[in-house]
Image: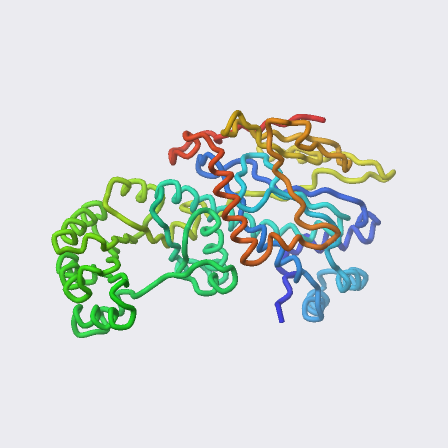
Length: 440
């Protein structure tokens, strides 16, 4: 049985609900919005990831006997609220940017509509998923740009929490990585998996040659042999002698990688193994990958940097109430005005304005909260960015599971191709596209 996700929630969401049920505001219709005020680290774009995971978790957002018992025993809410939570199901609507889409400061990445009681309790779950996954996907996209046509494999499970590792593998795959070492990510999300042997395999055997012979016997000459346990030049010579010139690949996990890659390529060619591929690992990030662009490297394996967002482990997104019904049933836009933390009130519609093949602007139109929306017909040079994700509590299955993950990966490639080339630079800068708000 799938574990309930309802207690992946901050306490204040339930205490607000408790108070709203008491004063009669719990059933007011509301619009909540998830967005980022800025991009972390001077990055030029962000990548939306986690949507498919969030929708899966939403299906299990239920308060069962164990959850209700905990809330009662800890006296977090009263008996009436416990009764309400026992029957809780999200019955509202969620729309947002497609997973894999690019976002910019102020982009309405996710819009949650329903009663206050419906929507307020989803804040922590939505933010924990999208903040983590979007941070990983943004870092992964930058690495994918730096790698060009060379394949990338995610191998950072040992540098993350066990469930975060699975989520990170998925986010990296959406943003351009081709495989993961994490088997659960392969099973759950349909991501190709890879991996052969670590240094422990070589150290297990009496000598390097014995280790290589055993690996080739088990996996064939097309395998990749790890050649830096002792001495790289000797390891390469042994690898080719054992596997022959048809050796599939060698992996280098230490040393001055540009120098080592050049030396290994020359050695392989001299030994007749001109088709043997070189994979490098060893604490790579987008800058190290870019520095290897001119080196004879065929593939990269990335661990710590990608699963931790390459120095920015959260996307910095927030979840704010932007519109609500008033006491008379009319819609009003609401917003936070705190210094440096202001938000734009009102229901939003978002479009990517293009000139020819390239995007030039993020256009966000704003209304008070009524359901009438802008559509693409009003903006002929723009692409509408928001799609329905949940309607009347039911998630669109197109965004779920392995197929949803593959779809998000394909959409990311399309969205990234719209950016002008300068937007793909790794240096710090303003966002690649300006976000323009237009009152309707």
